[in-house]
Amino acid sequence: MNSMRVDNHPVFGSLEKRKNITIYFDDQPYAAYEGDTIASALLASGVRTLRCHEDKGTPRGIYCNIGHCFECRVRVHGQNTVRACLTPVENKMRIESGILATASFKGGKL
Amino acid sequence: MIDLVIIGAGPAGLGAAISAAENGLEVYILDEFVKPGGRLLGQLHEEPDGKWVNGIAEAEKLYKRAIQLGVNIRCGVSVYDLMKLDQGWCVYTTDNVMECKCLLLATGASETPIPIPGWTLPGVMSIGAAQVMGNVHRVKPGKKGIIIGVNVLSAAIARELQLCGVHIESILLPQPNLLSGDAANPEKMMESLLRLSHLAPSALIRFGGKWVSPKLGARLYPKNGFKMWDIPIQLRKSALEILGEKQVEGVRVAEITANGEVVSGTEKVVSVDFVCIAGGLAPLSELAAVAGCSFRFVPELGGHVPLHNEYMQTNLTGLYVAGNITGVESAKVARAQGTAAGLSIARELNALADHADEKIEAAIMEVMETRKNALIQFQPGIEEARKKLYSEFYETSEKASMI
Amino acid sequence: MGDNETVICRCEEITLKEIKETIERYQCSAREVKLRTRAGMGPCGGRTCRCMIDRLVEQLGGPSISNEISLSYRPPVRPVSFGVLGGDVK
Ligand SMILES: Cc1cc2nc3c(=O)[nH]c(=O)nc-3n(C[C@H](O)[C@H](O)[C@H](O)COP(=O)(O)OP(=O)(O)OC[C@H]3O[C@@H](n4cnc5c(N)ncnc54)[C@H](O)[C@@H]3O)c2cc1C
Ligand code: FES
Ligand code: FES
Image (cartoon, rainbow over all chains, first blue to last red; front, top):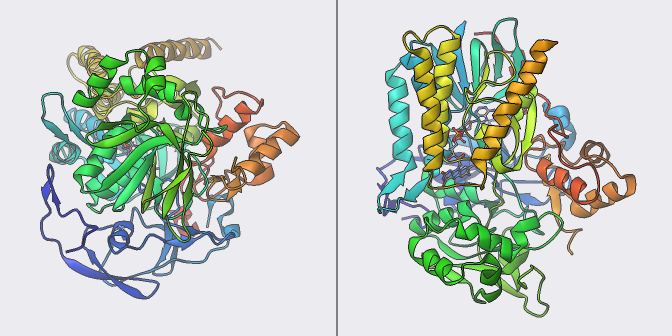
């Protein structure tokens, strides 16, 4: 059993069995459950760093977990600025921590 | 053209969809989160009678009712712009563009941060992020953590994390600096804690009973804090820096005096693998801003709110607001506001058949009743602030109609 | 203390020190701070840092927070790709 998962909860009860799937983050395979977000699946596997700051190179992970801060942005199947906290995982999903120049964000557009 | 598009599937949006659809309107709800329910999903409270209020179950009830009434709910869709049409509104989403006669913004609140050195490290997250991770996704934010910021939300969520099997080392104050304001002041925090006594029955009532004056309370405050559900709340300690190479490894803390100054020589490092920042909530009103609404700055409601009245109308035709975008309050108030908004919109679209005005007035009364009985009050003075806001709404609309 | 290590705008990594110096030097509004430092211009559209910038300006003697939103929101409020910006009308 994964010690980061809250499979049993004193008030919510136990989780039903969910389908096991595999996702790839920077080419490494990780186990995930159907219904996870990219962020929750990776955190359950102990992965906190989702990207590095484009200019300063400092490591970043989730901050708000509800789509507001854009700290969790990753690349999924070649698409940029996918928020890991809002995106459900799919089997064999390929996720990259992505290297983006801030210039491409000017005006908030890509 | 669609009758009503609602942005946000929280208690306000769902509440509005239900009352609008009950009156025959065609309703679409859009939400960027993975499931409907908004921030209600993460909530778990123990009522004074010992019953648990389970946000996921509450959200499920609202969702089922809405679906039953034929409401279209689309999750995973973000709205990024709005435009006023001659008649109605145009909604730009990451999926498509929609046109509707009436538009309701029910986008809720966002969290205000407390910046401290090291807060960009992976493993530092907002308190709400930890709540959603644990209660909604059922993944622990970490094994052992510190919460920075003492307030209603941080105390409630500390307890929720504990129920998820997470160890909370302590809840303490932020480092005093230009931005921390009252949040770094033990006396002020003592005051706000006393407003919480109904939530932490045993510990706080005992505590509050002993030192009634916040001033005295902060000064006499035991050096090691006191415990609420076994979690140490330390009003005389503050977090100076979050440490770690690639992710959080610890927090440097120090003792502070009753007025918030760091006592030199008391620094030490506490090792943890995650840190939560609890700076409070502010209405998320960006869409009201791009739509062109007028705003008012109302600290009691959490910051800038779109000018609106008790019918949930903004100063723009066909544009309504409900829930935390109008001011930070509990989920029940948000839901009641949603119901009122749904009815007002039905009236605007001539769908409210009999006793329209009576129905709406009853819904507005319900909002006020719910507000009065709310278990969690984020700020004092909400009712007075709202009264003032509504009268300003009528003053400005009167002025506008005279021109 | 630690102004240099305290990041205010996470998106653009602008520190408390930089913002403080800008406000003190130019006696400026939140809008001007944004233009001078890029704080508030990141992918989150200033959602995370705007209230801190407003507050700093006020604390350091600039204009106090008023009814008007000092750092105006501009669409898109969520970054979107150009493909999406074209979208069809439903
Ligand atoms: C982190 C957090 C924790 C909270 N915890 C508690 C608590 O424990 N107890 C309590 O009483 N209150 C709590 N609150 C207050 C909470 O806001 C209210 O209880 C209630 O959920 C507000 O309801 P709402 O419908 O106004 O907004 P919400 O429930 O916040 O719902 C708003 C919805 O709008 C969606 N949305 C926003 N912008 C967009 C966009 N541009 N495009 C698409 N969708 C969008 C969001 O995804 C969200 O689902 C909390 C708030 C937050 C932010
Ligand atoms: S963590 Fe903030 S947007 Fe995903
Ligand atoms: S934190 Fe400043 S723009 Fe995002």
